[in-house]
Amino acid sequence: MLELDHVTVTYGDHPAVVDFSLSLEQGRIGCLLGPSGCGKTTVLRAIAGFERPARGAIRLGGEIVSDTGFVLPPERRRVGMVFQDLALFPHLRVWENIAFGLEGKSRGARRRRVEELLTLMGLPGVGEHYPHQLSGGQQQRVAIARALAPRPMLLMLDEPFSSLDPELREQLPKELRDIFREDGVTVLLVTHDQQEAFGMADEIGVVRAGCLEQWAAAYSLYHRPETRFVADFVGEGVMIPGRVVDEHEVETEIGSLKGTLPANCTPGTRVDILLRPDDVVHDDASPMKARIVDRTFRGAQFLYTLALESGRHILCLATSHHDHPPGELMGIRPELDHLVVFPEQTGSAAVG
Ligand code: ATP
Image (cartoon, rainbow, N blue to C red):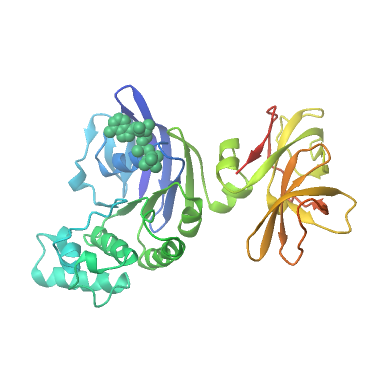
């Protein structure tokens, strides 16, 4: 449904998006995740037709909408876009807001489509209200209904939940995901909040300084990050140094870790291994001990920060039935089912 092929967008001399390639199938939900200013919004604007790429091609539904020497104007691209500020028309009722993009359709057809969308988005009975009479979550749904009204091929959402309170921010993405999936809507979302991305998206692209570092499902980003930046940006963890013993083993301060290593890891190579909090298991019976430096209560679990003998800090996620105070020694055991290995970087520190 959407394909970006080596797209570069520049503002003057400044490259905001560099050699960006991705594809999104019909009915899938994709998300661009990255820090502020990394170029996420620029990608959406290029897809919508508000920016003209300096290089590369964009296809929507198999048709080229942007290529060297050819740019289809935004109004002919069949994409719907919802911005952070929603931009609902305050003087129009909800149904009029939703019907706004349906000009040219008969009165009856517009009414039917609005009713359909109010039902789809879980907004029955608010058609006659004005936006200010609705909650933040309801306004968000109206903005999305308005963008969906003309049946776009692609719906794009730019930081759509950032103004909502924390509870809604957690709940609304999941509800919308179910609505979009049921209705087969193809969505590209932009956020800097990984929980939002995890809650909604089938595929997530981590963006850094205009470049797409990795495009994958959340599970792969967390467990198989391809770059240090992705390892750092997605989830929590630390890097610990190690020395390659053979193609299946690395010796580290917390013992020998086993897994398949990249081909360039010859014996003796110094590497850094990504250690997630769930890779370190609390085990009172283990002879390996680490001192508790800090802990954060997370309801079902504690996230412990532990100091190894060398002073290096690691993280350990343990069930909150085990309540150990800071200062105490705790038994731990590494339990990694695969190794995420990067070339050694001196001064490896905590990530996430
Ligand atoms: P945020 O999450 O803060 O919205 P973003 O990841 O969406 O950030 P963009 O808004 O795409 O990032 O901006 C990418 C880069 O391009 C930034 O360095 C920004 O300052 C620059 N930029 C964005 N719009 C323009 C513009 N119209 N003219 C010049 N530079 C721009």
